[in-house]
Length: 307
Image 1: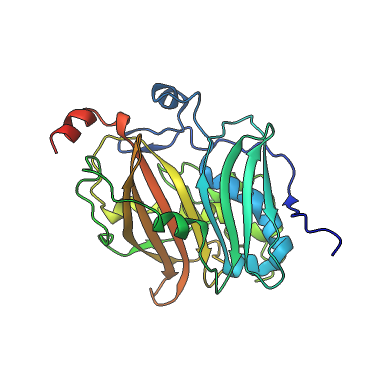
Image 2 (image 1 turned 45 degrees about the vertical axis):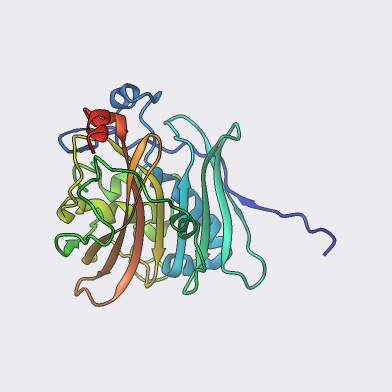
């Protein structure tokens, strides 16, 4: 080699679309609503974090081919919000020969970081970015919003889920897969053309796996106090026996794996396991850091002082 300069793959600048302006949970508007975002001190409702994952898919397929949708993992920590109209580019630093993990990141046109991530291909993913972040968490102080949660708490029940092409995905995700594909940043015939897919069936895009995972989240019954506004701070999607298919029934099981806090948030990390319909074969795992904004919970400071 003439140089040891690290090089990166990058995609084009894209302007991801906001599709959660009408999102509702807990009976109130979410942070993706402009008025709610401004009330909480943000300039506008942000793009939903998983949307950015689509910009990494072409880069990951360049590195690992279709196996990315069978055994790939994207593990991301969000750094700055993006609002509709802003341009974003994804980058991946290719792994060394024989390595299975790549460093990745996304930034706005002006260089502002959007997220940092690791991409890896299984079955041996090594230590992902979020595994590193989990290991570094410190115990939180007395929690208020999450006072009734504990590490190891499981969802109240197994949750049957499915994502058909024209299925409305509920109050949390007020759109269908077909509507998402009309606005997705990176189009692939694999998402809606069974004949073009290497697996003979249409597959669920990486960014929509989190939608499938959260579709039935209310059924878990995790006792989060509210009303409160939350956001995604960290998200990992790890395919184990993929792809996940459009119209295929699956079974979901959840567990709280960590509790944490920052100056502005209380967070609960949930690992969602997606199985085949019989609950026997693990297909995918989703790790999500739900960050709840302390100042969105009425009387937070008084309640904290009383604990």
